[in-house]
Image (cartoon, rainbow over all chains, first blue to last red; front, top):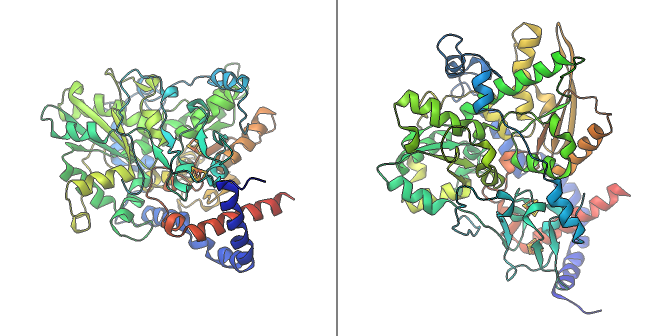
Length: 112
Length: 418
Ligand code: SF4
Ligand code: SF4
């Protein structure tokens, strides 16, 4: 077998990996709650619950939301999903599968 | 910029977004380890030769999520689009009114580029830095996250109420805030497009609101406004140049999109001492926001924020405790039955990662989905872990360690499947 750059690195990694696997699983399980993504997520929930950062916790309580949807004077006075909302804030989507099928016909294999 | 390379290319107005390569592999740096493949749900990134050098086969197959980029241990993947040069020129131009539109998750990542601990909240300093950079209005995408809840929540209630009538829009309703997921649905599940909420994402809403409502409130000529979407994400650059979003009456509703890493770079390049900045508020009208808006950055956050509205509308009573912890999602698929007084059960699902999204899509396609509302985020954990956020220092800190972690991950994945 030709030892390409890729298989060499994979082989080296495999040796190192399996050697430490046992220790790692336990450690990683314990560390999971404090990992990178969880730290950021926890910080988000802490800000949500912190009255000094966010005075209100529900969108409908935001005074600027009350203002923009005010039935008399608001910019979106006909309310959520009203006429102006449909014009500015809603959209439509495109079937992009044709481009995908063209790729597949060229013989390119994807996961789906 | 912050450990990632960029092409300083700003796609012109009218460009076909599906031909632009937002995420690219530098084949000279690729070591053929294959890590990127494991993070790609569509399979767009593939080995092209015996050395295992990788390439994205076609932009059509790539959802622009950047998960391959943030997980490449060799830093071989880079961004093909950056508006940083164009934005720097606009900030200097006295005739242009530059408007900031930062996403919720940016304020939980930006501080890391200035030495803060992972996840540190720096919202106030971020607003101060944007002012110092010369942005004319410090508006905030969190405001339109609140608008999104009003619109998308109302749409859901309309769909539920209209069931059984002839023109009823189908259930479940999928969220439409995540541009990687929207492109994924359009490409792989076009038959489910009627299930996608018709709401633009928060940034898709803030662009046109800035140029119409914002222009009116500040007595600014809408033509002079240049809107800058600041995102934890690469796929948002794709969303920003989608022509069908432009309803404000000008060329583009979103003129430029940069991400957290690029903002950090601009702050450093301008010589601003980020850590000594005071906390400042955004400008009102399109700046004020709530806790419901900030949780959009987490997987399960849009769902929780929407339920805080739906509960009160459906039950006619106040929701005493806004924490709806059952939908908070760290990884995988999370489902919940939420009991609403005077209404009944609202059935919801949250999927983190497109491979999990595909499972829920198959269920809907087969007509077997029991849910009313499904939230999907392309990046595992949500936008806080987006492809435009500061990199996890662990991934490149030690190649040895990351190789070990990847092997372990593969080994465990095999065990679970078996
Ligand atoms: S993760 Fe990076 S080095 Fe490894 S195959 Fe992919 S692009 Fe190449
Ligand atoms: S950006 Fe996302 S979809 Fe595109 S190749 Fe990378 S992981 Fe796959």
